[in-house]
Length: 160
Ligand SMILES: [Zn+2]
Image 1 (tube, helix red, strand yellow):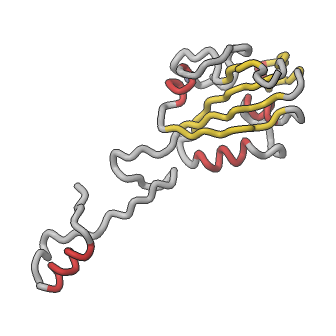
Image 2 (image 1 turned 90 degrees about the horizontal axis):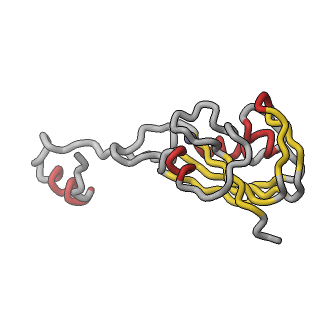
């Protein structure tokens, strides 16, 4: 359990030569993903990218195939077991080896990430609670065990 007594009272008790047996080193709370986290305090594990595609495009999505992407806004839900920030930074870079389905959409000269949200909600739960239309079955859902049809949803063209 966490000792909530303030440092000053600890110092005071030590200066009196008491309380030595119950004194514990302070717990260092490092909530950076991938580090030891405070028990019960979950690290950020999921993220959503709001993506704007300014022109309709035919995009080859790796082995999934080539698909027609209507212009508009998309929302992609993903997760990283460790270091979500590094994953998001990778998504934001246009120059990289294409690995995940989302990489192919983000490599398009017409796509841009307009907003990034981080969440503590598990990715499939977050995805299933997100509005939008599934236009490419299986996108980003190769290793999904929760029956999401796709981890990419189309939100339409709100700017028109
Ligand atoms: Zn899923």
